[in-house]
Length: 239
Image 1 (cartoon, rainbow, N blue to C red):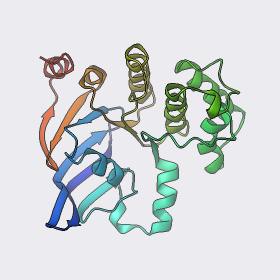
Image 2 (image 1 turned 120 degrees about the vertical axis):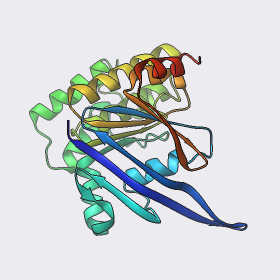
Image 3 (image 1 turned 180 degrees about the vertical axis):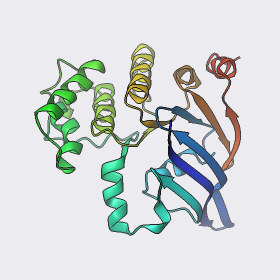
């Protein structure tokens, strides 16, 4: 497997009334193609800031982020826009679906933006939605879908264009327990099958049973990495 994502000593500093605060403080790690990683930690640990940096939406104060070998600190803003569109798939807690496009059209949007929408792409969009339990909802507008269904459309949209890196911020937040397990299990399978690098931020440690590694953050720092399968399963079971 090749290294899809490399994070080197990344720091993100914000100014506050009491002085500078390092929301991310010297974090380094790698994610390989075909690897699904969970990023966990309490509120305020720096997970969401880290995810925004990985999505090329936020620039680190210092350090390097390389996606598919491309150093984000050395490219122009216009190139960052292209990189986000072509090489990153992401779904955040607000799914940002286009209200006047149906479920299938929302998923196909990433292909359309990249000039790659063809018959095979339309079939793949249908197949992805079916695997996520939405095969009978292809023509429904977002307003006709539940919050959980909208989130699954957003997950399909994040995967449709075969990005190098797939990022998910609390993808199960609006799902019931049974559906949450089903979605993350399918998400993991798609990451592995398509040899993408996947990172999921989650507060629900039960979902860690489907990942290959767990990165734990606290106070902006990466404090522990779970790599042993038994340790990961114990964490998922709350042991």
